[in-house]
Image (cartoon, rainbow, N blue to C red; front, side, top):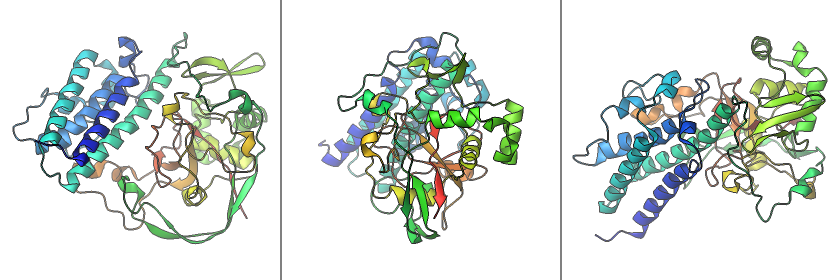
Length: 426
């Protein structure tokens, strides 16, 4: 049977995303695949299996007549939170699964890939809903590629040997010395009014990005770049973590209970600050964006600086005419980079580098309706007690982000590459 150009494009996209997940692990030791330092992270082996489970559960089992599942227990072991599918293995026990082995998980991936590609090659006509489900699965896997990096970093940070995941090689168009100079903080003004927000049109988007709707904004100004390590260090040295007047009530309770005194991965030695990166342990770079901070820390810093965090609507307006370019995972730096002083006064770092906390709570847009069936659990049921982040990070796959993309985390979360962009009223 002749495969159409459209089918081949879908197959190529599937292969590329699936191969990228394996590429992130090629130089790791078997022991690295098993680590789970806390309940909110998962072992690499689990990520590799779960993303395969998605395609097997929602596509192969539903669409391929007579499909034989790879293993009858995998539906239970690698279901994340889809209650409509069935029970899930306890999340906090994922690190205890020495079996299946890494080799078996890779065989599972290969089995799913072969079956799905063969099915795609044989289909004479793919229903648009099925194509949309494949796109969802690929974007879902790209999300897990980012989690693989951030989960592994968190697990490595508990090892006093400070394992190195990757030694970065800077791209030819990147000059690190240029980024050692500071870029002055300034604010760029935007006029208010009734604007359209959310995704509409061709191309993939998650359900929480729509429907497109209108919203009234006041005039505002947003910072030209992210807050730097040097600037956040001034907050620390000024007693920011000890001043209850800067913190939301829940944030202050979190600081006290968890004894938080600096961003995650920072450590002071004598008079110098160090941090742990995926490239190992080293001195804090003053001009790089502060990262791995919670919403509570971002909000407290903004108060200390006499500013505030932007709303997700303000962020989207500011980003609408900006190119979808930045330091993403494909650059293999795996750490946010300093703003470029050559573009002083221009908007920088909106995409890549750090996920940017907003002051917006994660809630449905007007008219939002979750999809029918189990995939409706993907985003909708999490619209409570979380905050919206925008822009992607240095661990986000290139091409995965949009200016309407809504990420969301609990306000205390900080194991992702999260940072701060300030805003103010005009």
